[in-house]
Length: 73
Image (cartoon, rainbow, N blue to C red):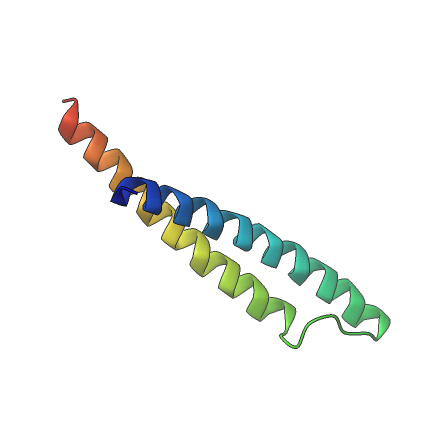
């Protein structure tokens, strides 16, 4: 497996996990309003983790774009 394929799969995985955490954060917030809890983390913490993962996705995508621009000027 090439390094580009590994980075592409990592990017997709981080993107998927970020959206799952976003959804879990929203569900946790709604559950907290009713008096229940779904996760052991606060909704804001789940959103922070999702944003951190999305920053990594952006960095990976920018690296891929830079490599493509170097190949095809």
